Image 1 (cartoon, rainbow over the protein chains, first blue to last red):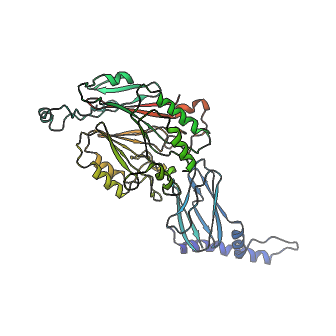
Image 2 (cartoon, rainbow over the protein chains, first blue to last red; image 1 turned 90 degrees about the vertical axis):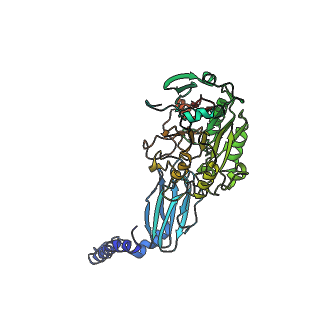
Image 3 (cartoon, each protein chain N blue to C red; image 1 turned 180 degrees about the vertical axis):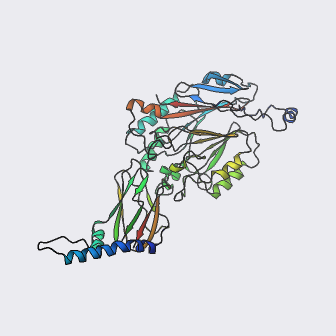
Length: 132
Length: 335
C-alpha cells in the first residue's frame, strides 16, 4: 500500500506544472481574455462543492482507489442489479445502508488518512480512499 | 457420474454381525455413491456393485431395500435455495411466483418429503415483509418441517437480528444447529457472518469447535449431511465462491464414511467429490447466475429468454435408503 507521503510526492510534479502553466499563461497573455488553468486552491473548492463519485459496476468499485482532499464529499452509486453495502474496514466511517440498484450513499471525508472499505455482502469487493 | 467413480453404500449398521465387521477389516463396507440425476424427469442413475443403471424414483425406493429393518429406513427430503424474496428485476420479476411454483413441484412429488432444507438467501434485502412472505408461502409445503439457514442477504445491515428472531430460536452460538433423522445426522452451518474484506464465506473458530464437539462420539458409519449457504469448497475464488476456513471443518468430517454437503449461493449446480465427501450446490428458485468466469461478475444472469427461465431454476429431491442403499440426489427444474 502506498504511503500518504509517496502519494503527495508523486503529485508534486503535477502541482508544479499547474503553477508553471498559470505563470506562462499570465506572462504570455494575449489582448483578449483567456481562461487560465485552475490553481490548486480553486480545485479544492470545486471538489468540496461537487464531490467525487464512485460507481459500483459488475461487483467492483470504480475507481477502486480514489484520492481526494480533506472535506470532499464522496458518493457511491450502485449500478449493479444486486445490492451492495459499503463498510469501512476499521469502522472509520459510517457504513452505508444496503444500496439497491440506483441507490446512493455519501460521506464527507474531513480528516486526512487512508480509508479502506469493502462490500460486506461480497467481501472480495475492496476499495480505498486516500484523503490529503 | 464419471467413469471410475467408486460406488458407496451406507453401512448396514443395524444388522451386521461382529463376524462381518472383523471380516471386512473392522470398518464394514463403506462405499460412496455419486448419483447424477437427469433434470426434469425424475430418473435416478445409481451405481451399485460397479454397475451403472437408471431407475425411476419409485423403483429406486423398492430395489435392494432390506425390508427386515425395524423401521421404514427409506426417506426423502428436499433442498430449495436462494428464493431472494424482494428481488424484482430481470431475468425474473416474480420470485414469489417461481417460489410458489417450486413448492407446487415439491407437493407433486411421488413421495412426500420428510422435511425441507432451505439453504439460505430466503430474502433479497432482509426486509421484515419479505421474511413474512417466506414464512407464509412455505407453510403450503406438504412436509413435516422446514429447516432454514441464512444467506448473506438475510443478515445484511443488522447481523441477522431480523432473521434470527424468526428462524433462529433455540439454536446454539450464532444460530448453527444439528438434528438426527432415521440415523442420518444433519448439520446446519452458518458461513455468512463476520465476513472479512477480500475474503469469502467464513465459519469462525467458535462454530468449528462446536462442530467438532457435535461430531465427537458418533460412529464413522453415521451418514452425515451438512448444509450451509456458501459453498464449503472453492468453486470459484475470484467471485468469493467458497469458505475461507472450511478446511478445518472438513477435517472433522473426513473420518465419516458418507458425507453429503448441500450448499446454495451460486444459483446453479456444481459438484465435487473429495474422498467420502460429496459437495453439491443448488439452483435458485429466484434467478440464475452465470457459470464461473463466464461473465464479468456473478450478478443475475441477463438475456435469458422468458421461456427458458424455468429450466434454470429448480428444487432438489434427496432420497436416503439407509440400509444397504444409496443417497440419491435428483435435481428437478421448474416446470
